[in-house]
Image (tube, rainbow, N blue to C red; front, side, top):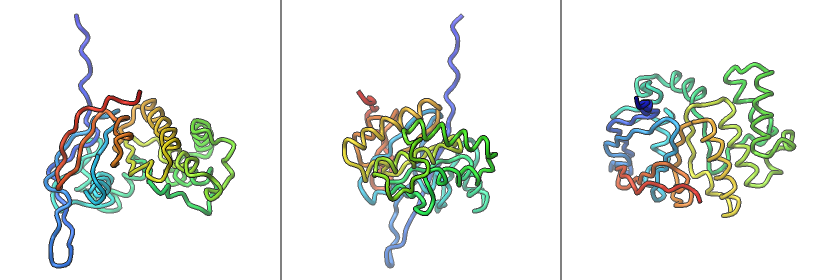
Length: 239
């Protein structure tokens, strides 16, 4: 008998998402009845020009923002039915973020930037130290744990940001133009690292980007244009 493969699990489901913004006396539609499903363990690129709504979409998926209509489901839970406190607690536990501008706290050391996330998630000190050491080792910065972000290079700061995003073991990773502030060579190194760490752990990642290079690392590529998501040819992955 043939062994049946397990059915793919939908990690994120968007249902008819609509989001409008006021521009003077006019309403501008950023997302127009967007529906999509993103599978567990897959990496998805959301392509689009600046101002197309990529960041808005990530904010809705994370529960930072709420849609005018429609639903966002993450891990089977409807974020649009939660109040702000419930969304904050869910986001803190289940979602990791990587930003173009790194968003590290400048007054905290590299280790303390990670430790803060772990403390907010009530991870015991011994387990917290283990995770910090393993992740900083994985991103090649174990020897910079007591350094402050302002003396690190852009590539090093983004590697810290990756470690911070993964340290609380979220099921979903959201990245907003993660290589936008990096030179080509450093961007390639960061992408290789991010791809390896995400795939090793079977996490779902959604990346907002305008870069074809970033998209090539993803299993699925969608374009956001005029408020709608449309599939692009399947990414072949890095060579």
